[in-house]
Image 1 (cartoon, rainbow, N blue to C red):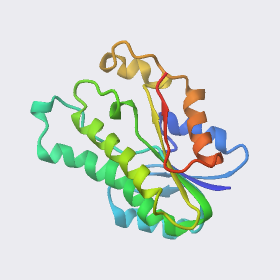
Image 2 (image 1 turned 45 degrees about the vertical axis):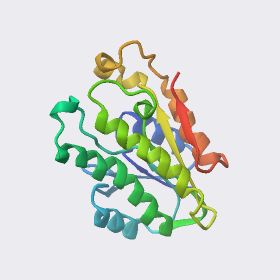
Image 3 (image 1 turned 120 degrees about the vertical axis):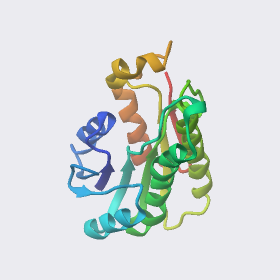
Length: 200
């Protein structure tokens, strides 16, 4: 398969790339480094990326920003960071990307445990993750050409645990192998509209 992995140089992305490149052709999309440049917060950048790449079998997105801060400190503009990047960025990847997928292709988005089990400072991030979960379930009812759309929602991953553990008291770090398998299930399975939760 020809697979585009947006965010393929990130903590989770590197491991997902490493797995899929064993048997597939991989292209990495990123804002600063990768095979093709893309800013998912900008739909024209998404369109330009797909124009350069051409037809694909699979799109995986492991990218998107949202502002973390105390609820009373978050401004309206702070919320728009997550809405434009992680939420609409991934929605636009589906909206535009479907036209560049071969029949029976798949799109896998990424969220996280905050959708179901938020922690402090995450009102924006949790809201965005929950929105993507609803979007994936709804778009699966309508997307055409045999295309499947799923989302992988992971807990705090092992490789980022030291950096973020203070935000997630009592949370168990998720082994990277489990997280990778979430993406494998989405790409190689037959599920559509699934929220693949990896929380323990």
